[in-house]
Image (cartoon, rainbow, N blue to C red; front, side, top):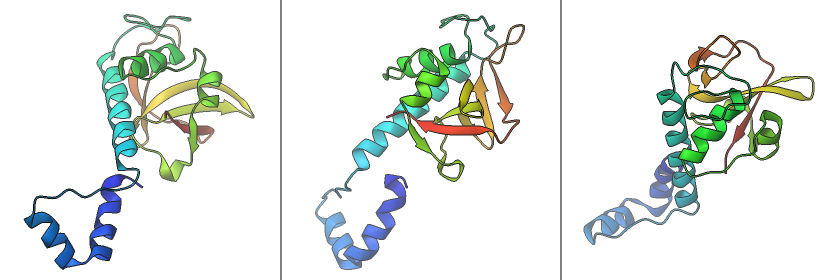
Length: 157
């Protein structure tokens, strides 16, 4: 639940009079966890924008940018530009994220493709069932629909 989603329930509990008083005196509402949620959302949004800006960049195994990428190189580069450090490989990135369910995924979360317990590919969730990723040799960074249910989601903290 985002900070924005929590605010209406706080207004309801505080009551209309308290909300109006707060607004009248120019006060601010302190929402526990809101700053951390807002920072994470900002970082995720920036990482997503960086990945999208690399649209058309060629895949190259082992490349971490700025002009060529493999899958985990794109996620590493995107989050680094957004101010967060990630490990080099898709599996190590999975181990460093906060795991979230598909129903709680958000734009900017990492999408890990797996076979059994082995993670073999990663992209950045763009919303509406799509990811930005660097697929394979001969292809380029692109926005693509998630093609399998064998995925896990991770949020960069």
